[in-house]
View 1 (tube, rainbow, N blue to C red):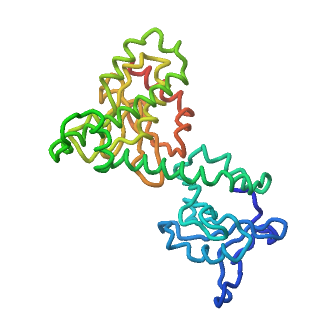
View 2: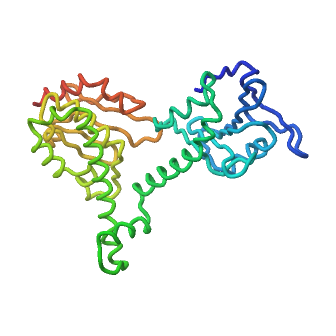
View 3: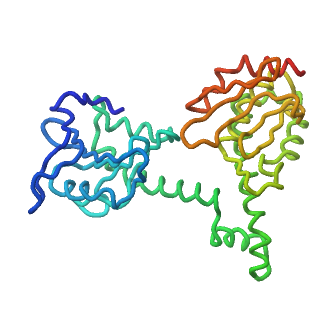
Length: 325
């Protein structure tokens, strides 16, 4: 991924040994070398193993006795990058950068390039590590609150919209409202991005209708409030808006609707189950599928690795729209 030749021992040293105090012959999984000096240490865990700071004991020890400024803990799916921001030559307890191959944050790509073989710039990434570390932690904290807001998060918003005493009854009343407002806010942000991407001219002929549709639809979760086990994700909403953007070349935006369920996220024409345009099967942890329908309404699932791949099925989606339009 970073461009180093794993078969060149001058670049990548497997089972790297560096004696630490009275511990002799301990090995760390990989060391990345540059100009004969250790630059990065990598410790690997099983793919089904959670990455915790307790799993990085060897990284801690080796970090202090080598010239490495970057340590990586990985299970092959997630990569946690550490440095020594808190104390010189002592590995931090929290990573400054987290890369999840199942959900790649594209804002991190420029920073990762600084660690590649061809564009190695250690000083630059170390200088940016502090900002990366705290931005990443804030983003993960926000994502956690959007999924499962805690009492402190709810109280923060209640205090800004409610003038009376915040009793237990008030907290219970506002808790679902905070969740609903959060999802609607995220939905609005996705809609704004969609409008910007398509251009205002595409909406000019039906601007009022579009705004009315957005207001009445709300987020997908609002359409199924009867089932508390259904959780509509931002990724599903983004996928829905991509399909909707494609379908808008054939019909007005307000005719494209969505319904979420436990097993899939349905995208329909005219909010009619007999007019399916696509299904998003995003509930699996490892793989995601886009379900498309033929003339007999038989569904075929296509594995996708990113939401952008939905655009490659634009012709099939438009054909389905024309079939019902």
